[in-house]
Amino acid sequence: MNNVLISLTARQLLGRRRTLVIGLLLALPILIAVIYRFSDEAGSGEATGEFALGLVSVMIFTLLLPLVALVFGTASLGAEIDDGTAVFLLTKPIERWRIIAIKIGVASVAAALFVVPTTMATIWIIHESPTADGLMLGLGLGALVASVLYCAAFVALSAVTSRALIFGLIYVFVWETFATRIFDSLRWVSIREYAYGWSDAIISINDKGVFYDPHLGVTTAIVGTMVVLATACAGGTRALTRFEIGERA
Amino acid sequence: MAVNDISFELEPGITGLLGPNGAGKSTLLHMMAGLLEPSSGEVLVNGESSWKNAAMYGHIGLVPEREVTYPFLSAWEYALASARLHELPQPEVAAQTAIDMVELGDAVHRKMSGYSKGMRQRAKIAAALVHDPNILILDEPFNGIDPRQRLQMNTMLKELGDSGRTIVFSSHILEDVEDLAEDVLVLIGGRLGAAGNFRQIRRLITSRPHAFTIRSSNNRALAAALVDQPHIALISFDSDVMEVQTTDFGAFTETIAPLIQSTGVVLQELQPADDSLESVFAYLVDR
Image (cartoon, rainbow over all chains, first blue to last red; front, side, top):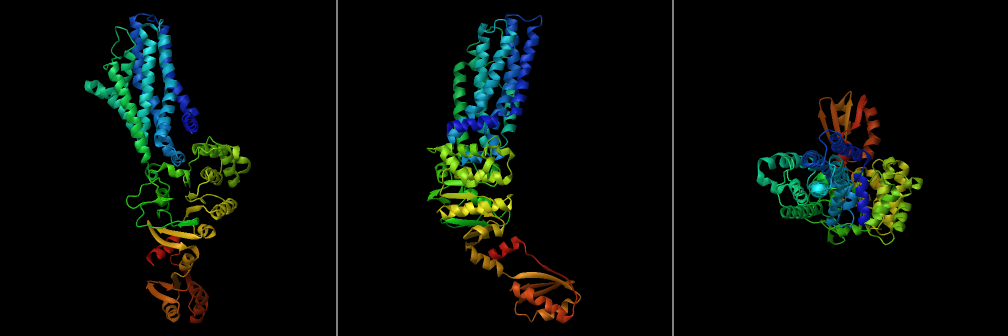
């Protein structure tokens, strides 16, 4: 049963056009990294590390990673609800938690498969010693955590509302990008901050620049991660259990 | 469409849910299939509530009206996926049995994105039958299928009904229900207009008062001749048009031509005032 659910979700999710667009978007930071590598500023010092952190923070963690997760997270379940194929799954004797867990799992793996290698490749290209100061590993781990958490949140959101894409965009670009920078206390409710918390436990560079600016410790990040995952699974399962076809499909 | 004050029990065999578009047929079927929560009352399937009861799907099959097929799967893969999601012990055998019932021929291994509506409908039925459910719910199964496919589906559903399954299907076309269902539920405006044996309901429909509008060179003279006929219930005038209501459709159509001839008026127009299916259903509800 699980294999069928995984296979149907993955085939639905990884359409040719969707993967092509995402692949092209994720080529941008790699292209910038290549340009930097061939510039005069390239090297292995703190300045290069600072540039790598800045590029990954702005282009991947702030922009591309949430977008990729939003696409996969909302398509994993929301698209099936919108086009009616979800009825095929919902009229089978399958526990609703299992459907949510698999949708989150597949979307997370898909997003991570795109984002984590891009993040690590960007560091690897920019920095002559990419493993120094835990840069590549730290940011790779952060990208993995962020992929899973964003996808979990967006899958659950798409079980709750047909406007998951809009609410997701508002969360990412209004809440995380602006609100958390204006009000420091809001960083406690930010997936990006949880991801930074995981990264920062590994990264040991002294001068982190202005863009990579983690505020939460690893313990808080772990607790936040657990809370997001538990809330997404419970909320998504509850919404799917009470799913009414007339409203959405 | 909301449905109100509806109470009925379904027995094994085929039941047709008849009503015009927007009557609440899909709402009712979705409630039976556990995809809508009744705001009051309850829907029991095999004695258990259908709402929030995923285990129920082990015993029922649903064929929704909307396209719900994965375009990248073939009918065979679709039926097999359904069998595996039901965790059947021999999913390949179950899928093959269901596929054989819907007669998709060589197309069974082609991707469903290239299927006609009728073929997709049959693939959906195969997926719904794969676990051999004792209850089958079909929402407008005859929409968009050609006469040959309709005949095939009729035969298949009759066989399923004869084998002791409870089958309920919706349609807004009287003839679809007439061909197939022994029992009928007539739904209009979210309410149950009539329920029971199809022949009884058909008789009610046939014997309902019929209205005609007539335009002639002398409406008054024609009305004077018509009023003596025992089957004429009502005659009314509206400027140059006369509306005649008859309690006997057959007698009216047999007598109207000789009457017109005998009175010497010139007939300009004679047509049914309202013979739409909606008016037929409305009559059943108001009766």
